[in-house]
Length: 321
Length: 215
Image 1 (cartoon, rainbow over the protein chains, first blue to last red):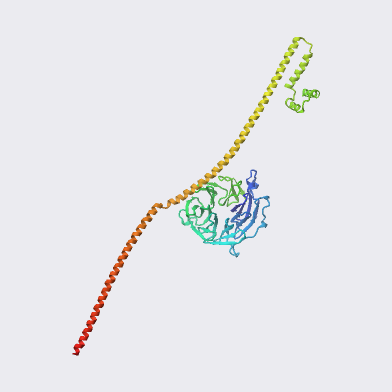
Image 2 (tube, each protein chain N blue to C red):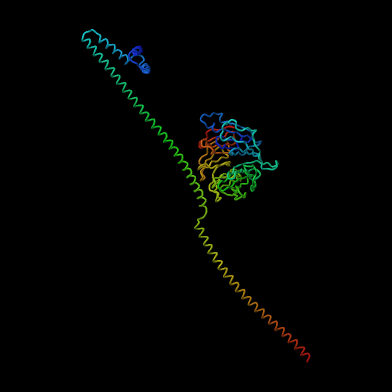
């Protein structure tokens, strides 16, 4: 089993994780983190099958959990923020409308990544048809299509301050789009820069994340930190293996990928620490910023264990599917 | 125990001894040994001494003995009072220490919160510093601005000079062109004139020859 995606609930007390069998499991963090938790609290509170194929992306909005797999986005009413009865959360029969950006059912590529653009309350979806679709969350209508990638899109992220969308794809390009006009403002071909290119791994970009002024991207080429205003790479992180997800956290960069560890790196380029984890290779990393009392980092990968870190320096325990 | 019971019974007639006191005294001195027994013994010997018919020496020794027992009772009472005082003071002491520790705990909590805030600030500062360093590295790779400006100025000057030269050369070219034009047009005119002359000569000759032939 591989865990491909995770998402925390808006109240921060629940974690939803999706695996390659199409199942979504909801874990109760408050139960697992309480002082008297048992092995039973580390099992999911609820598991259901949401898609036929793998669940590549999960996203929590205020009242829904959006999950994306092969060509469809389905919409589960999420755990209520008040969480009065954590046991009877959502039932599979209450799956709402399946949204599909594609006209015909012949062309159903997979959806790799979703993110929310909170400026105009829209959902940005990137997938296997080389395009990025932007959907208005209020009425479910697809507003714009951002075309430009020549191969499928692996990851999308939103740059809050400048109202821009960044996307990375298999064609090795990180494209910066203006979210209002839908034009591609910049195109950075990472593999063309000698400092970060690693031809032996290829040119695909599997993770893009931004901090408004800075951007991290990695995949085939080494994980590198870019200054977005000058579009120049400032630091290269010397990590073996391809990185699949990275995040900015306070003054550190946390990244996961091939290799059974979470790498902590400083902005200057040095790798400060590598914390070992259970799965052999990791696919997803999430930090719970929605709740002050359950500030944890969770990572999941090619195993049915999801490691939970309460202190970033060591693995506290694992949740099991 | 029995004496206490008797005392209670006596108390019903002579004085109201509260139950609490009885209970406490039973707890402390339930077995009847010790101070209580001594007081009873004293009372008994006092009544016996008052009613005794014996010799004055015996009476006197008895009296001394009683004084001794009285002194013992007083001593024991004094000791108990002091122990009580001491306990009270110990209690105060412990109260003080307890409130002290509570205060320390509260201030330690505050200090922890302060330090956490400090850590956050320091992390932000570190992050900013690292960002500056990263940018500085990139900037270092580009050449210095002054040098570039100087190079630009030099290039500008060169450009100006070259365009000056070009102007000169152009002017010269124009001049030569005009001169050549003048030369060529003069040559052409001369050619024309020569042709005209030749023609008029030929005409003259041909006019002359028929004239000659006609003669």
